[in-house]
Amino acid sequence: MAEEIRVALRDWDWLTPWANGEIGASELAALGYSLRIDPLNTVVDLPHSDTYVGAEASLSKYVQAVANGNDAMVALPHLLMQGFRHRCIIVATDSNIESPSQLVGGKIGITGWPDSGNVWTRAALADAGLNITSARWCAGRLTADHPETDRLGEHGVPGRIEAITGKPMIDRLSDGELDAVLTPFMPPGFYTKSSRFRPLYRDVRVAEQKWAAARGFVPGHHILAFKKFVPAEAQLAVSRILNESKRQWTQKRHKYAETTAWTAVDFWDEAQTLPEGWDRPGLASQRNMLAEFVRESVIQGLLDAVVPIDTLFPLDIPNAA
Image (cartoon, rainbow, N blue to C red; front, side, top):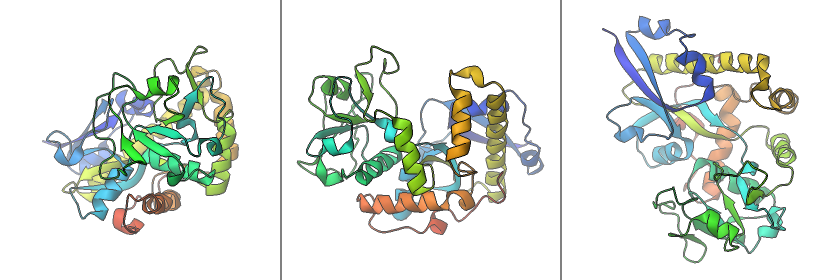
């Protein structure tokens, strides 16, 4: 009987070809394994899970774990969540703030200080002249539906980087107690004409295109990780299955572009603007981005020193297409 490799991932649209049975797992079967993918609405704590041997994992948490000598899990340079973060800075709809420079000396809410996405957002703000020391940061829950939890870790600095509890950040932002909020997921009602909030940048696409031109990559957030006892050949086989599912899904989106009003235009703009293979798994495509994430983590005080990329990802993904 085949040994099951059970993997927890966010319920990404690109998993549809796999879920529909359009992709086989013969390579894994030949190794004596079967694959089960559980689409979830959150990221599991893989090292402490009794259910999963593989999962979508935070890049930031993984890098910090390796830096601290924790080898409970290993990861592949396979980015499962990758995207720009200029869009994640929101202000009140009636705010006159339209650039990071206007936030200097202000008060900014953040959903989690060490989170991968927020590392990139702070990097984007720093590029625009707003360094960590240029504002006061408040870590708290976005809405009343989010739990009160530790969102700082060991990174709090009295008077500069502090936790806030009680009143949700979107209410503080609406009431003028915060000047902006950094959040990867928008609050309810954001995508409506009557929204209380808007992106900081009036033209987010232009800001992100400028970032891509300057940096040469798209920021990565979540990676494919396994418990260390999973054989390398099985890890790579799972990676290839996921990559094939995304490839087939993308081909279908190119054909059925009417899923949103502007999907076809977005695909064209992406092809003309971003480096070819920007989301391809493997160090050939992702090394520069990953190295920059480590560098930013040092700059922002999340790491004491640079961790070499080949230490973080000793197993590369060859010939990913």
